[in-house]
Image 1 (tube, rainbow, N blue to C red):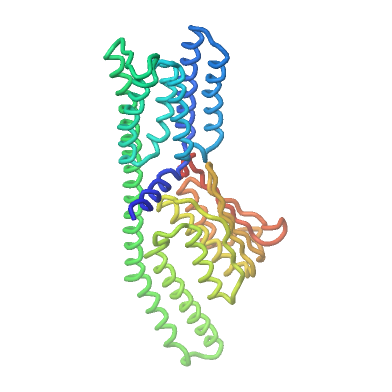
Image 2 (cartoon, rainbow, N blue to C red; image 1 turned 180 degrees about the vertical axis):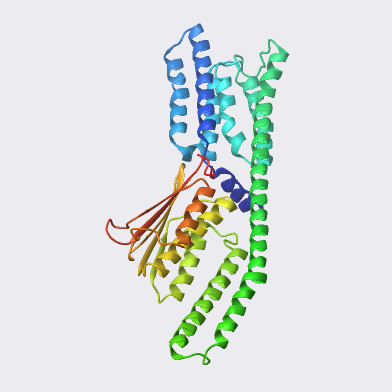
Length: 388
């Protein structure tokens, strides 16, 4: 049972792509290491074999820079580390010009492996290099050492690099998790506070008003009887809406992904409103609780507005995310937006306010150019998939 857990942990750890700055630093380090190897090799003369070997540095760097999948692949790490270590062996001396390139190749697994797995890499890397120093030197089977201190430095650097980088990345990951946890707890606490206030004050007053209005039924004349009946229906609808809002305040996502929560909400609204067609397509990345909650509220509010105010029969919700942004688009075939926003249109204002809270932009337009409404929300993301 341990192996599947390790694999799942690795996949979760490796799922985050690189930030632009980190990738630029990594590419610069690889190219610098290659440039040093090129200069040292050129100093003693470059033959045809050296020319072929030297091509590995820029070519491998270009491939890794262009392919996020390879940068996240443990197989690619193993190939790269083995290939650079083979360059050290081929150079015929453990004090190889390619040593720095091998060190840089260790940076990828060091940064993205869990700390306990990176610790094994920190121990195994110097052992592998010691093997190369003993059996891969100018005289196989003999350790040609001109300076014990030099060998000690060569053996300690991979341990220091891998251990230090892994520790820093693990610390950053834990800080990010703690921040997300604090955000989630703060949201839940505020949600409970609002729910209690609504339940203990506004909801009770609403029920009292409903009882007072209901008591007038049958006691007033015919012209006012219709007004009383209409007021009773409106108060019942308001109470129902408040109950729904209270339920959402208590548990908006419940640990689900954004797309899963929106699909469930779409199903609930479809069943409660004469079966309109509501489709939710796409998959959302894992988002911090604060961001996910606001995006969910925006999507839910947009769907509700389309049903209540636009008499929409078909609503399409599309979710798309890349390395730069998350896009949520809700399009319907209803009456469309009015020429002027009506007074008290709190739904659209709430959408705009929530979007501004998370640094997102929202646009309202006609769904097909003439009729219907399309609401598009763009949430900027860092290169690692986390919201700004």
